[in-house]
Image (cartoon, rainbow, N blue to C red; front, side):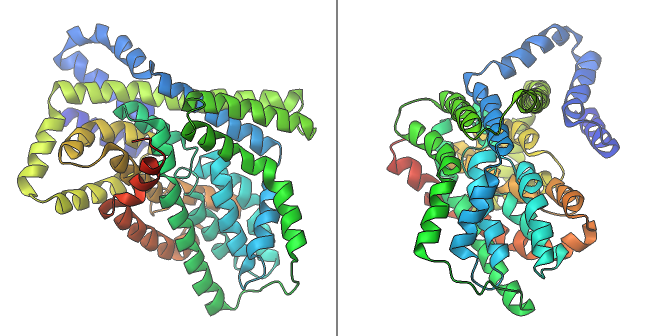
Length: 425
């Protein structure tokens, strides 16, 4: 197994696509040690994808693409601005709140940065904010997307661990909101210290109400998904399909969709789904080889042999997950880590839904953690700034988010309260 580890590190260093980074070392190991297993490789790849839960992924991706194409972000921005735009640093608060609302549409941090960063960063700079601060706020608030439902990586975790997708989606609401509120605190501190501008014009209740009415079509998407699942009206996969239908109806009603935009949506959905499913398939081979060689059991024995308390084990696991999350794509990290550590932690008494939230929150923090956080590089591209400048601004958000992770880890009810309240667990 040392060979697999060496090749894994080598391929990651060379920047090979993550699917092949996981797949090639596993197949090479099989050829050298167990050539009879080769005929099982295609079956294992297919079995890793043959899950009804995974059907929700392309639907969620397409729903996000459709809603982005229709330009619903503008209505969300106006609604957010009417609520928090008047306080000092108001545009930064609007950025965070819009990310919270947009997270219920896109389900992905990169989509948040691309869609909102191109709008907020130039606008904030024009109003007198530092470009680096504006970029950092956009990156930090974007990680609410993979936590607040719908969430693609939550679906991946549910498929790998065989847990309830609905319960996991609902479990992400409170942790996602806590991260957004922590961003508010940092924005308040920095805005006061740097004397960032505030809007002098008062917004009447009538104007707030009108902006809310205009934002309803966008806000209805997460309501349809969450409400339908919680109400037992449809499964998460069916919720994704209905979300797509709703987005199409809305897009055509607003006259913002045409044949060309539908082709772009279809191409983007197919590409993103294919990339993710290739990762899932090859990661299945990697996990299978590890299982056949009893690596998870050996790791479990080592960890449990050194650390004898649940608190210490969870602490060590968090450090490991955070490290992996800084350089490995979140879905790939879930696929790699969940089968290895999941059974041991569940056996220790950690609820599978709670464990899912620990991993999701942890790995999404990795997206904005230097030196490899992929969202930071997306922010550099969108914000047209330097990586080291964003790093200086992002650290307070990372540290506070790690504090939120500690709460999620050691206070299980933060993740389990809503699923229990709705009878999903």
